[in-house]
Length: 345
Image (cartoon, rainbow, N blue to C red; front, side, top):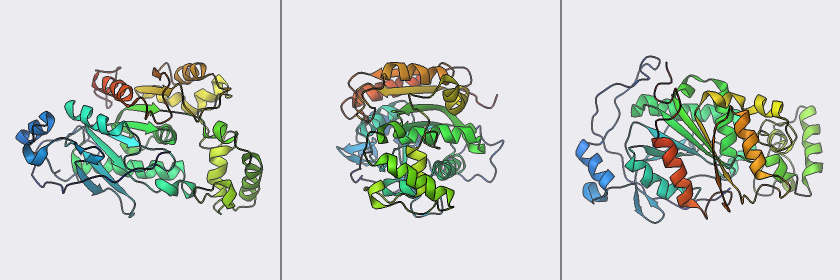
């Protein structure tokens, strides 16, 4: 839910690369990817100023990397720091775009040291587009991005890092069993909170849910709601209902779900190594919610996945950026559970 500031980019280099990827058995028509030389890579990791001032961060608020299009829509643009065959894909929440959270800068630096790239991308729901989009569309565009990384960047696997509603995108995407979803080596859910429970604290929500339900029943789910339903962005009856109504498509992490309901919604995450990062001071979680109990229930529903509870952390962890980076980096660089190294087995 954070707006971003402009980034600094450089043009992609066009040097050749050889070698094959472990995805070659199912992905055809791959092209050679642009790769840095070993010497440039070493300089980038060391940050010694070679290659025109190497390293993923030029200075505060300025990322160094490559911007590229991964799909046919004008909005389908991504930005990658580092030039490695393993990528962490950041998926932001509502209103998010590039540079959505404070921890992305130190994360880019930490990932470079571990020989991972950080990919930030825009899709149809970025910035003010979320109100006329859906999880289904997000999943399709995420799949296009992963396909691009496999075919054009020779990717050897990705880790999905979701922030806020981006966590819903991950859970939804991994349920689709799309071909490229097999490239997902692990998932990190940062601030998997309930949009419904937060929206329920706003006075206008109940009446607007009734209106959205009526519009959907009348076959007008793709039409826009009144401005007071969502002053920040145009929103369709379908998306409002999805975010705000009980058991809507976006309703995955609510504290009032039973254990069986939670397993139905997130149980398939047990097939993917997953880390749940929960901010214990999250301002978008109502005060009546027992955060510790909710985290435990979510992890249990996902088959006993790992968790990190960040005391006093805000929703976007702007006040705990280094703790966030440490947790993410440690999770990524470990060998991981069975299946981490070879998801094709």
